[in-house]
Image (tube, rainbow, N blue to C red; front, side, top):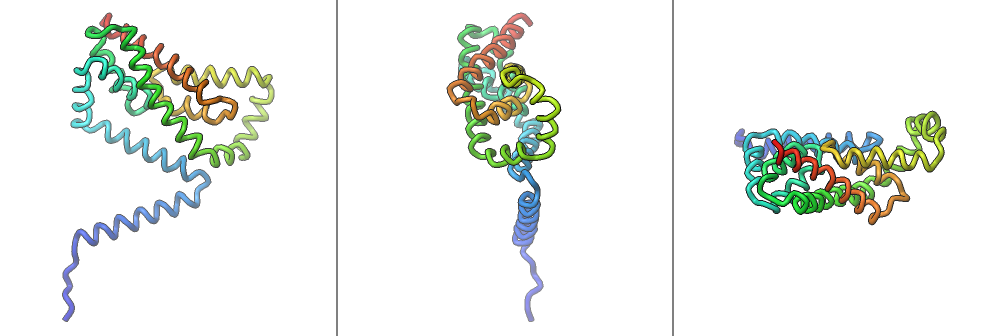
Length: 211
């Protein structure tokens, strides 16, 4: 007689594999699977950052001086990490030289933004081109973008992306906007990211020193 015993771990593995396979099949069928995967990763990261132990860990990073400024800048660049980045930067404001800490934090934010920029431009280029050939983009392009002079449209996009990057808003949005513009070179992006993030971080540090 064959044993009726079922290994719980094997069952869980099999169930997990079926779920992953089903989700992957869904992602393949949808029009923008990479964007869907990235969205899920961002949601997972956001939920992870809400855990009490994770929050306590990041709050403890505010005791490392200029290293805290660098780490705070890295978190400042991500939508899900911005609140922790702001908290870390505000915590160290009374203990550091604000201009130096602002530059160090800007370099940390630049590192995060550059990784995002390279990842989006290298990985999502096919889906960006697919979106540009979609009806939605054609509608927006025909009703708004083409009615503006090309130079105005270009600088308007740069302005909106720059505002998002300089603020605690998710840099992912601004970086994606810039990565989608083929004429924006890596050096131009790096200068913009460093300058705008440093400005935003200096404002946070100055506010933290006053409060």
